[in-house]
Every structure is written in C-alpha cells, then in structure tokens.
Image 1 (cartoon, rainbow, N blue to C red):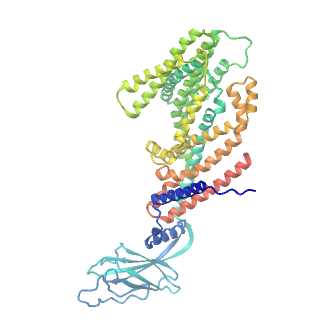
Image 2 (cartoon, rainbow, N blue to C red; image 1 turned 120 degrees about the vertical axis):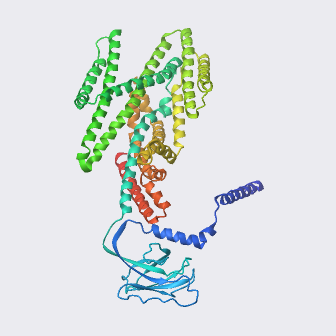
Length: 610
C-alpha cells in the first residue's frame, strides 16, 4: 500500500480550525465571566458550607423542646478609669454562664463558659445589647454544644455596640423531648406537592383533549390531498365569522332566558325533559333509512327540526348548569370534609355557562361554513366556465376583504391606532384586490390545495406558541386570573396543547400508508378514514406521549410556581428568597420524590398499554 504524503494545506487547515476553536472558547470564558478565584475565596466558601449544611438538614421533622437560658453581664468597653467592673457571683444552683474578661473593647474576643446545662444539648450564644436583660434583640452568630456534664466553652467576638451601661451575653440551650413530628414546613410542602400533581394532571387533560383534533389538521399526509374549488373556499371563509356571530348571539340569548328561570321545579323538569325532546326531534330529522328521496318541503322541515333540537339541547345545558350550581351551594355545608365535591359541581356549572356560548358559536360557524362550502362546490360543478369565473371573482374578493378586515380589527384592538382608513378600510381594499388577483389567475374550475394552506397555518401557530416558555405564559395568565394554581393550569394547558399537537401530528405523518389507501379506496369520507385507518395506528404512541407529558408538566409546574402559577414552586422560591434553605431543601426533596414516582408510574403504564 502506498503511503500518501501529508498535505501542507490540510495540516494548515487543521491548525487553523484548532486555533479558531481555542479563540471561540476563550471568548466564551470571557463572556461567561468564569473565575475560579471566586470559588476559592474564604467568604464564598463559608457561605457555600452554610447553605450546603442547611440543605443537608431538611426541615421535615421536629421535636418538642425544653430550653435553659442563662446570662452574664459584660461591659463594652471597659470603664474609662481603668477599673475592673464588679460582677456579682452567679447562682450555681442552676444553669449559669461566665464571661472572661468581664469587659473588653468592641471587636475583641471573650471566652464564654456554661455550666449545669442540659447534657449534649446545643443552642445559640448571643450578645444582648442594652442594660435590660429581658431585651429580645440578640447579636452574633455562635452555636455552642454542651458535653455530657452540661458544660461548654465558646469564644464570642463582641460587636461594636459601645455603651457605658451593663450589657449581657445570653446562652440558650435546648434539648428534644418526646417523639418527632412533622414540621409546619412539611405540612405546607405536602399540600403544595399534591397541588402540583393535580395542577399537572388537569393541564395534561385539557391539553390532550384539544391537541388531538389539532394534530390531524397539522399532519401533512392527511391534509395534502384536501383540495377545493375557489368558490367553495371563499364561501367557507365568509361563513365562519358570520356563523360565529350568529351562533354567539343566539346561544347568549338562550342563556339569558335560561338564567331568568330560577324556579327549582322548572329547572328540574327542564333538565329531565329537554334531552328526550331533543333526541326525539333529532331522530325524526335524521332517519336511519328512507324508502324514497324526500321532497324539498320535507328536507326544509328536517333542517328546521335539527335547528330546534340544537336550541333545546343548548337550553338544557344552561338549565343543567343552573340546577347544578344551585344544588352545590345548598349541600356544600352539609357535606363537611367532602365539601370539595360541591365546590367542584359549582365550578363545573360555571364552566358550562362560560364555554357553552363559545362552543355554540364555533359549532354554528363550522356548520354554516360547511353548508356554504357545499353550495360553492355544487355551483362550481354545475355552472358554466363563464358563470363560475364571475362567481369566483365576486366571492374571492369578498373572502379576501373578510380576512384582511378581521386582521385589521385585530391590529386596531392591539395598538389602538384610531385611524380606520389604515386599520379597516385599507385592509379590506387590499384583501379584496388580492382575492380578485387570485380569482383572475386561477382557472374557473381548478381546485386549490386548501389542505396544505391549513396545515401550514396550523404548524406556524403551533411552532410560534411552542417557542414561548410556560413561565411566560404563566405570567400572562397570572395577570388574567390572579396568582394561584388556576393560572398554572392554564399556562401548562396551553403549552401542552401546542407541544402534544406537534408530537401527535408527527406520529400521524409516520403511519403506514397501506390502511389509509385501502379505506379511501372503499369510498370512505375523511372522518371515516381517520376513524378506521388512522386512529388504530396512533393510539399506543398517543398514550405514551400523553403520559410523558404529564411527567413533564409535574416538573414544569415547580418552575411556573416561581412566577405565581401555584404549586410547590411558589413556596420554594419564597423560602430561597428568605434564605430559609432548610425549608427549601424539604421542598426540593418532595419534588425529587414525586418526579421519580411519576417516572416509575409512567414507565409501568407504557409497558402495559403501549
């Protein structure tokens, strides 16, 4: 084998790369201010030892204690005439201390000896300024330990508290009695760690329920085949805001009517009868099979019946919320320790009242958008090229004006510009022109890749929100709903939605294409394709991702508590700020235990279900 000579250029290039790496790391040291001299400084070593020892003694258990106190007089400084102050002899029948010398200059050391204290006890030795021995102000930082005979010797540096009056040095020795018990810190830690676990559970549940439908829209393999004609897309866009406005108005009115009915018998009767009425009307309007094609009058009547069934169902939801709220308030006191169940029912009733108008508005917007989209599809299929072109021009301009007009209203709300020619009419004109341009350059009956557009918009929103940390979201929700775990649930829930939607969608994109093509070949619609071809392949990874996200939320909830998002992080940062490292150590241990348990439980569940 022939040996190749080393290339000078290659050696030079390697040397330059090494030199460049050294320069980069040297600059990194400069930027990050790395200085080991700080670590070796005596002051920082003492602070590090003090904090480490405090962390090693978590404030979890405590004993009842009995204590002995004794004090001896001291003069700071010595009398000006140079005489030695007269110190009365101590009472040796009990615990007592002596100070040698009896007077000294500020900053000098004195020897403190204690006698007849508890054996093998510990406690502080402090300087008490002033002439009043009952003074509770103590200076100094000295801990003493007695031997088996109850004696100790300590050296105390006198502080700079000069006074002609007699001052004192007080020794307090404590010994434990009885059995250990949980400290107040341990009780608070238990309450907060339980709050943390359920905060993470609710956030994971909320995020999962909303992430699942989003994941199908954010999956490229499901959306790339979705194409629609321009007229259908334009009518769908126009239908959404109109339907949302109509739905919100109608549902809000129904809510007002339902709220005006405060009689308990009427509420109870409505809750019991309304579901049956709605189901009967729905079954009539949506028969399972028909012998002949219904007439136009029958179809219109069925649509009206469906509308009535929806109104009755909404009225039932409001009545159920009102009945649940009334009953929960009346039984909360009688439930005693289980009163949280009544509080839960009351909060559920509030959720129903708040979310029902929003859900009704979205459902109405979706229904109207779907109806108009079908009408646009039929008009495109049945119309001539010239008529479809005209329809496309008109509808595309209207759809563009709608989208840009709504964006302009959003800009006005955010920045309060106060000039509608820039934030309303300008965007409407621009949107209409863009819509006209799209209609002009698109052939009349061509279909457009609306699925890829929806996929791109959804992915962009998910990526943008995912780039915002949950701590920032918690700050925003703390402003919205106040300090507490509710803000943490909302912050973690939103972050869970965008994170799981991305993970779920990527799992959908990696499914086998065979079952998908087989179901589509049978003529199945999109919903049937998802139910029978997609969902069976994604259930195990969805379960795995969901459990892993719960584990993440438990750990993240300890962080968002720092900004007021509830959970154990809230008290942890308080104790750190107060330099109460023993309490902080107890909370860090609780976090470590819970995270370890969550990891073990999730691994067992993944092994069982995945």
